[in-house]
Image (cartoon, rainbow, N blue to C red; front, side, top):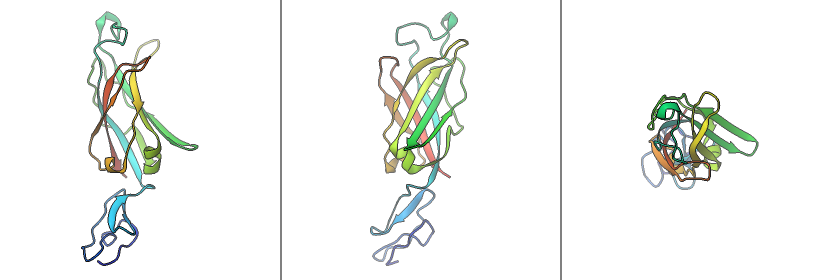
Length: 171
C-alpha cells in the first residue's frame, strides 16, 4: 500500500506502492518511514545460551576442591527507572563451557533491555559462590531478531574475562 498503518498486523507496513508486510512479533511499522522497526513496548524473553570461562580463577587457583572445574550459573539483569528484572540459570557442574536453554528473564519490555542489560557468571560452591566475570551489554534495536549474540566481558579487578552468548525472543 501507499500508506503505513500503525501496529504489527499483516496490513501494517508498506509505503510508496510497496506491498504491506507483517512486521512480526516485537516489531511495528514506523509511521513515517513505512518500514518495520522494534516496538519499544514489546515484551521479550532473554535466554543466556552459553559461556566460555577460564579453566582457573583470576589468581591462578582451581575453582573447586581437588582441582575441579567451576560449577557455573548465570545471572541476568535489566532495568529502566524503578522497574527491573533479574533471573538466574540453573548451574551446570564441572565445566568451563556451560550451556542453558531456559529463559532467565521473561516478559521484559524492549525499552528496558535497551536501557540496561547485564550478565554475570558465578561458580557455585558449598560455602560461598565465586564471581567468575560479567559485564553490562549495550543492546541496539537490530539485536532483537531472535538470533544468538555474543559479548566479550573484559577482566575486572574481581572478575576474569569471559564470553557470554544470549538471545532475545519476542513473546
